[in-house]
Length: 79
Image 1 (cartoon, rainbow, N blue to C red):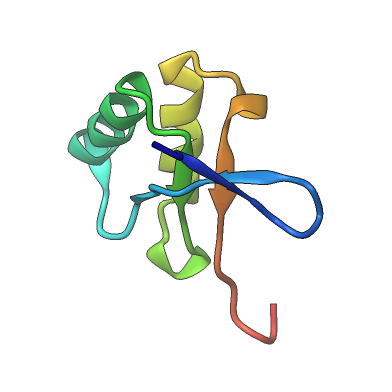
Image 2 (image 1 turned 180 degrees about the horizontal axis):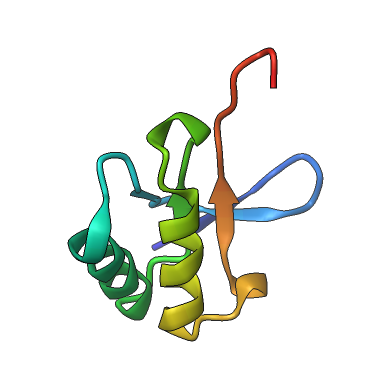
């Protein structure tokens, strides 16, 4: 079974991403850490979620190397 897809620029992206919308506080951080510890390597984020610091802390605490992750984010046109 294929778990990644190759992009036009040669990078690969995991087919399954873990959405971080509505994840806040300790429960949100624990959910992200659990996902990472269970093999998730694609985090889907957005500035509008307002939890960028939380996502960063979860990544750090998970001990998964940043280089192993594919992180997508969405921003507004005026950003």
